Length: 133
Image (tube, rainbow, N blue to C red; front, side, top):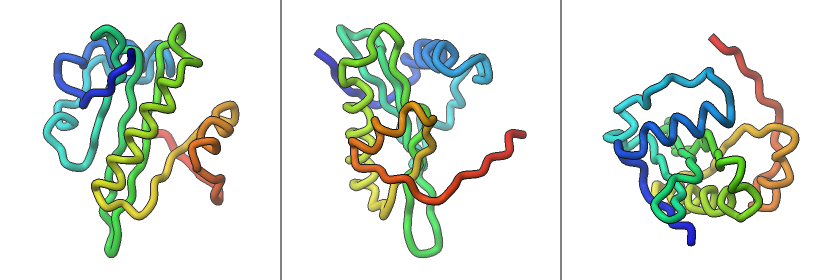
């Protein structure tokens, strides 16, 4: 059975390993400690038998008149994909955004994951541009 828990310091090394395995070595080897004490981000982990099998986070952006949530790093261990874990993670983040009075949630997705997010209610909107520095 999969359980979702808030990220804490004991999860750090396992989460970093999942991020590096899934995305590349562009990730630092340590999690920025501010994630554990900030009200601007919620990190969550998916656990199966107390072993981390997924991770996701939502960052809150306060604007002049509203608040938005930005979903980052939805990742599930490769051997655990197709079991609904990503869906559980995203649904949990959607609830966190509602609890934090966000008026919208923004995310970036690869082309291959568009249908996954569309099934969860996300819609394509405009274009995103990025400059990596």
